[in-house]
Amino acid sequence: MDQIPKPALSLGLAGLLPFLASFLASLIGLWPVFMTSTALIYGVVILSFMGGAIWGFAATQDLDLWRWLGLSVAPALYGFAIAMFWPFSDGSACVALALGFAALLYVDREAQAAGLAPFWWMRLRILLTTLVVLCLLGIAAL
Image 1 (cartoon, rainbow, N blue to C red):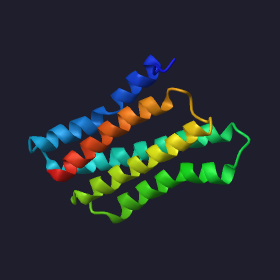
Image 2 (spheres, helix red, strand yellow):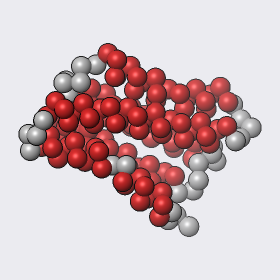
Image 3 (cartoon, rainbow, N blue to C red):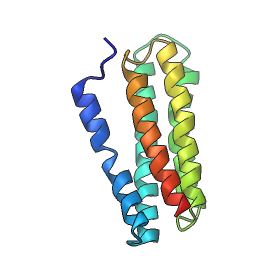
């Protein structure tokens, strides 16, 4: 019953590839600024996408739409602020983005508790978020 559906797990793991490639390329010194920018741009897109998942959950329910739709838009706005105002050559932008993913995990947990997300959602989100955060922090440390 707790098993993550294979399509969700497979596609979720495939979505990690740009993060992993950016980390590994940075680790071996291959275009470090370019790879940091790649991870950040992709990360902003994925952070926005994951916020959109919360919108999709909330839009089908009769609940406090201001709260849930607001929480779903916040990751995109946060990612936009990082993209607009943080120098991508600075590793601290990766730390800021990692914090955004960690905060979104809290929203995911709240959505699960409210009965919005499927039963397997948090298992998948914890796995993927942990790996994304580790990649981003690894890039920031290099």
